Each structure stands twice: as structure tokens, then as C-alpha cells.
Length: 433
Image (cartoon, rainbow, N blue to C red):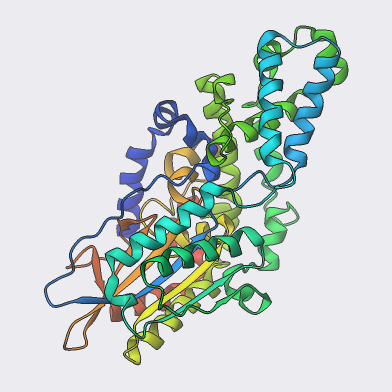
């Protein structure tokens, strides 16, 4: 009951804050990218540990850094529509400018769909160096450091750049690294029941309702009239919704690229918010603590949390020091943050219009988002830990008399109970289906 009351209190605080999502996006339009938002942290929080405690171990999970759109087709499809309209003389002056800018974007993006961008490489390099400088004792002589990524190249490249950042500060570090199938059972795990739910094959049938709601938010007419000078041409040659979304994805991903081109201003503030809202809702429903999912997506992170606990035990119990570095995707760190019930990462909403009030993707999983657990020990062998989400100290759903630090034995018990409990049980009963 105490845990539930703490969770509801955190939810109430979050709701009061997150009603500002529309205002936040208006002030920082790049946040409309949601999970495409470029990593915003430039300096890590670092509250001094209680007297006598020294850092000795870092447990980490990081999403890959900034990337290009998943496929070359995401660029080429939009460019092809604009090219044909250009050749037909059906573009407005603004449309001609957009077409010319898209061609410049293509010069950088062609052949790189889904790959890490140079910014993504810099993000992980810099996160690593901030980690090392904040907790040098964990990386001292004879540190035992391991690194593992999923088999996707952008994750492996993120790992390589992270390690490079560490070794620039201490070339003597030995860091074995893996990117193979043996670690996928915890780095990138999901269960068939969640597949069925997310693919609309399960009993909950959420997609028809979502699609109707989404349809009311997507209105391409104004945008297309600003780009094309011939409504008949548009009607006969352009799939309006498809082009709208294509331009949106390119627009919000430009912050992750090197080419200086800007497309976000093509959208009004209301349009930009509405597009973010429907994508934000989709990510929440299929990855986080959506009540009608029965906790299936959050439960997918239990293998990862179990690996985090078991690996930490091996360092704590055997007097070792070092770091465990893990690299994956937004679809892994989002459920992990919800499972661990970090403040701001596990809000509950059963209504589509209210999701943005309790859960904002740009706060939880921007590009290069990361979770860090920092372990400290005193001479008596007592161990405490603090939690970092995107290099900001955060709370979990249990009290602490030494916040932002927690006593490891209490945390260990708490998270083992979490693993043994279906995630839906932490959702308020009145919101469950």
C-alpha cells in the first residue's frame, strides 16, 4: 500500500507538470521529435556521496545515439514525390525550396538509413567521459569493465564510441566488448504476448480506437497547399497523409544530422504538437505502462533488470570495481525505466487524450538516453546506490532517508519483488481493463 501511495503521489506531481507538454514543444520544437529528440544533457548531476562512501561500480544501459531515419526509403519516397511535382511545375516557391533542401539532405543520408550519425557518436563519447570524470574510482587500476550491445550496428557503433571516450582518458583500460546473439536475451528481450498486443492480435484490440483518434489529429491540407500550387495535381498524384508523415519524420530528425536544413517551420505549432501527440501515444501504448496492455510491455524488461541485479551482486559480493556497459534501443530502455518506476517514466493513462499529461517520450528516451546505477561503498562494506536517468538523478518508487542515494540491500529486495510481481499490479485498479 505504501508503494502504491508513493506511486500515486508521483503521478499527481507528474500530471501537474506534464500538462505543459504543448508549451514545452512550442518553446523547443525539437522536442516534437519525441524519441528523435537529440540528447539534451551537457552536464551530469553529481550530488556528493555521504561522508566515507566512495564510488566503485557503474551499471549502465544506453540507447544508441542519434541516427538517420531507419531506411533510405524514408527520404527517397518524399524526394520522389517532390521531384515529380517539380518536373510538373506544380510546386509553390516554398515547395521548390523544400525540394532543393531535401536534395541536400539526401547527399548526407543516402545509403545510411538506420546508421549512427556523427552526432550520435559524439553523444556516447561525451557521456562516457562525464561518467569517468564523475566516478574515477570505479575506473581505477584493475577495473573490470565489460561492454555488450545488440546486434544492430548503430548500437555497436555507440558502444565503440563510448569505449573510445573512456580510453582517451585512460588508455590502460581493458574493455572486452560483444555484439552477438548470446546477450540478446536481456539486452533486447520481448515475449510473444506483447507481440500479439502490439500487433493488434490480442484480446484488447486497441488499434481501431487509436486509429480513429489519430485520424482526427492528422490534417495535411494546409501543409500541402503551402507546397503545391495545383490542388488537382495533389488529388491525382499525392497521398496526402503519407507525405505529411514523411516530411514530419525528416523534419524532426534534422537535429541529429550534420546538414544545415530546417523543415520544422513547415508545421504550425498546433500541427507539430498533434503529430507528436499521436506518436507519443503509440510509443507509450506499445512500450510503457499503458493500463490496457496488462503490463506486458513493461514485463519485457524483467530479463534486463535481473541481469542488472545479478551482475551488481557479483561486484558487491566479491569486492570488485568497474563498470557494466550495455547498449540497445528505445524499445528496451523505455520499459526498463517503467519497470524500475523512475519518476516521470511510468505514468498511467487509459485515455488517449490524457497520455501526454503523464508520459512524454522526449523526456524519457531521446537519442542516446541512458540509465546509470552508481554504487558506493564505505570502509565497513556498507553499499549504497543512486539512480541516473539521462544523467539526471532520479527517484524510484520507494522512500530513502539518504536520497538521492538508497541502501543497496533495500533496493535489491525491492527490485526482486518487482520482478516477481506482474507489472499490471502496480497500475491503479480503476484504470485497468
